[in-house]
Length: 182
Ligand code: AP5
Ligand code: MG
Image (cartoon, rainbow, N blue to C red; front, side):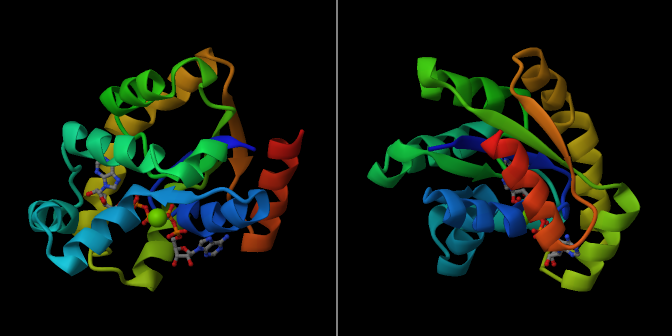
């Protein structure tokens, strides 16, 4: 059962493809963005802290995110594998995840590669609360600054594969399944 991390710019299709991959491999789809949006909708303490941060396109603090992931990965359904979507996003999160997973580690980190122009178009068409021009730009800037360096980190561990994320969702899914099954 695969233990996967899906990396890629905001709007690259991580959520779309992770849901399909989770179904194909029978493992949970763990999206930190979805977990946070549920907390916001339910107005929990976490949600109240996260809402303004998310609307601005900023990152929720690492220690909060690591706590969420530690708890989620400890659930029985994650013992057989998982698709992580939107986590890790910073160096501290990647180090924390590696410490949590221990020797079993990850099978693969996938970079879903889609250029800026295309992701901006996709997000503006979607219209989520944080899909304003300002918040999209902030998220993309933070991606370059904090998340893109993780590609090299995973590549150095021989865990990274890059998959072209431009095309129809079916085309992209076919490419992903091919590299994961290889
Ligand atoms: P998160 O929910 O992770 O949002 P994001 O990173 O901005 O990414 P998106 O969900 O927008 O994009 P996606 O790659 O999932 O693409 P999707 O499949 O939706 O995070 C939101 C916020 O939460 C963050 O800004 C931050 O504040 C906080 N947060 C979350 N995780 C955190 C962490 N680890 N640390 C700190 N803070 C964290 O596709 C986008 C659109 O394109 C959709 O409309 C879709 O239908 C469409 N689409 C998908 N594939 C295709 C295709 N092939 N062709 C055409 N359209 C497509
Ligand atoms: Mg998403």
